[in-house]
Amino acid sequence: MAGSAEAIPLPDDSVDLVLLFLTLHHWSDQPQGMREVARVLRPGGVVLLRTQFGDRMPDLYWYRYFPSARRVDAAMYLGLDEVRVLAEQAGLVPDPEPRWFEASEPRTLRATYERLKLRAFSTFEHLPEEEIEAGFAEFERDAAAEPERVLPVAPAGLLVLRSPAR
Image 1 (cartoon, rainbow, N blue to C red):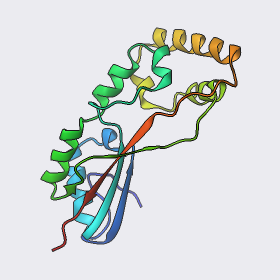
Image 2 (image 1 turned 90 degrees about the vertical axis):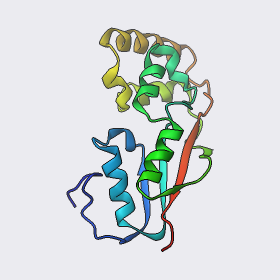
Image 3 (image 1 turned 45 degrees about the horizontal axis):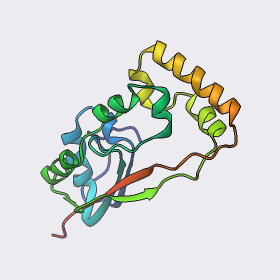
Image 4 (image 1 turned 30 degrees about the horizontal axis):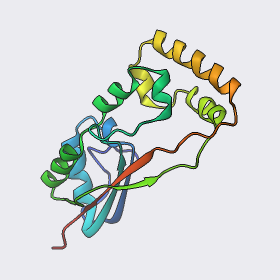
């Protein structure tokens, strides 16, 4: 179905579960998008909001290669309290704290480099090209020197939001 977070093409109270996986920071109108999520969610339904929180950014290994990436990411994501307020204003009830878990398997330095060089993360849209080129050159050298080195897994945040029973 064609639609957007701000105009979900579903009837009111029509879904039991909404999964938002690293999308909230891309919405053009976050309050409207959250109202839409609340609208389509049945009473007693659940939203699983997998996101980063600007005030609780993980220490991602690859940030060391791109000096401004952590700042860029932190600015791109809402803080935890901002997400809570956004949810509450839409009529949803957030859990007191996010649940933290390992969202991926440990990867080697080489595998991490190979994945990141695709630039699939929106972070790279906001970095200067010189920083990207220098960062990937250094990252590639390190990955060639220690390809099998296993990197730590950063925790991922999942905030559960609930639609109150009516």
